[in-house]
Image 1 (cartoon, rainbow, N blue to C red):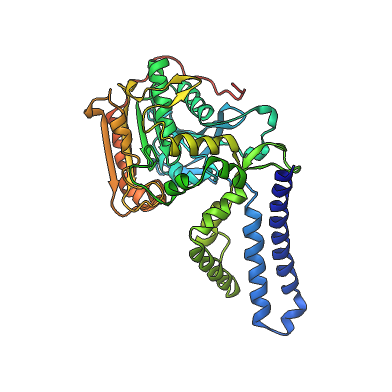
Image 2 (spheres, rainbow, N blue to C red):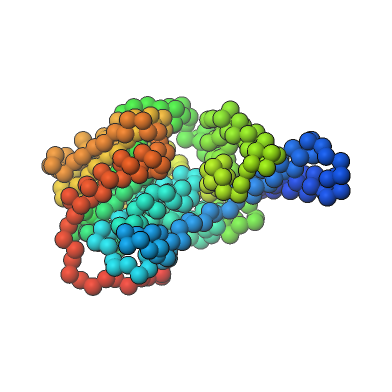
Length: 425
């Protein structure tokens, strides 16, 4: 019960801060004060505006904001998001470009379940829909999933990916971004053993901890310093009475956000103080650089407790995938079974979360894959975020990934296109 109370207390604190911001903004903006100009009132109003917006974003799922795209024909085409497979903990969605023939290049982007929504990959998706049929794993916020839906750990995550790959067929190209890289590799190996004809054409792993100990970072050091009992006692709470998932054990998004921000507290503090001054001077806009970044960064989701704990224990502490000892439902998932799926790794030389060496370890695990189907790339000046978004991704990495996909594309089956399905599997 105390874990539910602490969860509700965090929500109360967030709600109170949002209210304080709104109150400061409304009080300091009272029209009569305009008769006596005072820079302090302007600052208080600016503080209130920034504070209200920041705390409000923490419980709101961001919109994809991809409503149209300009194609090679010079025309703007509408983009519609269809649900292809619907499941309790996450959906497979398709970004369908209207009035455009189906593209031969089908891409599944596996988004991380690491505290932020799949919308964190917005720029990645936008860059791919120009000439690809893009599908994305859209994970749900655990606070909104009833306890009756059951558990969700690393094995369940892997089986979800297996189902999504099976749905899209062997002509699909899979791109796993960051945290899901090792589990996507395991899902591919699972298919290789159980249903070889359903394997994807290629697998691109971007900045993921396949072997966390290959190049230790602060993230991997933390995983070794704390015990599983300490993690469960300090990080896990139960969803409070406000949400559908009441009683579900989770790693709360607000707790994750405090950890994220504590890693660079000085930088975040300066960013917010600078934004307050910009608002005060009338230089800020609704979609300026600060708001674009923090609207996404502050939007956090609760993670199922069993997924978080099993990730730390099995991927980071025990290194089951790095040692090729991972099992799903009692079956050993042998990564050496991958013999017909081209695998490429992408790393950032300045990545301080999943440092160079952690992801490329996947190629050594693919013992059954010929060297001609293996590739790797290290982007010289890119950090963790830069290898899947921003200039480095658009100008350098994306062209290489597309070229890799085309070089390893399978012939599309002659079967008809599957209809869109929205029923849960």
